[in-house]
Image (cartoon, one colour):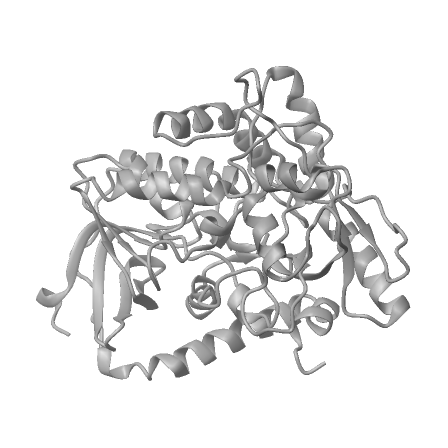
Length: 441
């Protein structure tokens, strides 16, 4: 491909989830922004987020919120990143409200804060059980009306264009197999996690950690690639495909877990990794591949009002969550590690940023506190956009050459990416790999 045929823009963002779209919205209106996404715009894991988004309600809750986040992360979190996220949360939430995001209110018109596992206070805003959908829809609607933001769907990043640890752009392939190069002053990785590499995951199957594989290929620093969260409660099914998440907020509202004998066996509001371990222990004890969840303190009408999506999905499988024991099982859910990024989204490569689940900002430590993911994505996406807007550094016009004929078919690239990532996880933690990554076992 000749250099004059390169597509050129100010900033290219790879990923159309909350992190990618909010980055685009926070960039100056006179900056050309190109957002590419692997499938359709709404096929992102942000869209699936059920529980809610955390917020610092008042200054008195700061210490408690900070400690809850650190404790859930086994104190392996970056305290500075946690502090920045919490302190930034009120402004970010107000921005969402100004953009039209609707959060549920109680009978008196006050915001209905809920609580999830490992939270000591009710501090989670929600929109029924589809908070991610509400936020993503609102952000996309506004972004699509902005003249400086262009979306391109069905397009996959297959390589980074870099030289001497400086990123110049990406190589991508569209749905028709046509390859091209996009050159930009700044490149933002917002490709999500790695759920598509797992047999059982709550993620979309095309979320396969492409940014992590390319980081391994190009020597970009990664962090904690074995810190992968297994969500304790997904709807048990023998069907192929993505696992349906039963949000932790259901347990926050009183749902309990039962074993094969109908016995309650754990405190449902402990951190996710603790609850997952308790479930696995019960499954081994009884030789089963699931346990049960039930919500006895709500009527069917109340559950349908509070959790319409979850209630209806369970009913389609033949279960009334308020009366029946709904079979649930753990599944891969979230990546705490990833491309190492500072509080402004900067990676170890110049002009390359990482935000959202792709980035390891240090907020989550070893285990993510429930409903911190949307907040983290929003806070650090805005900080990355602000940094890019302030950056007046010059960049060489001598763009590295790109030989599109040198790339194998996309299927081979995806296979190579999977092997790179899985080998890295295995290198970091053989026990985790054997337990959750090795399908043959």
